[in-house]
Image (spheres, rainbow, N blue to C red):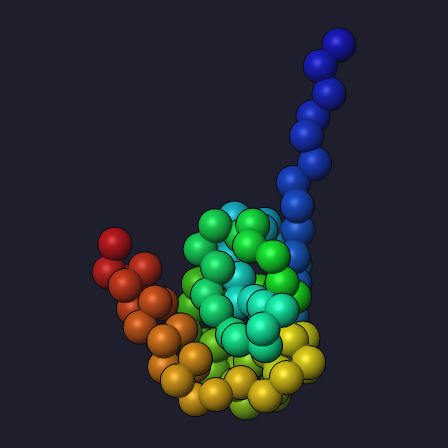
Length: 92
């Protein structure tokens, strides 16, 4: 008898909706306190997730959702890099 695999669900820090982990982008805070984008979703560090839409990024920036999730201040350059990533994904 075959069992079904569980689908990992994560909450978006922008819209606060639960979605499939594969449908989201992960932002991590490493042990060296640097903020990075994690395309694989498997890097070590404290993670926060965002949907692939610009509105969620703007909501997360406005309500400081990423800062709360990662427990650190997020530099403006990280938000700019996230916007560029989202533009690249939307163009595909």
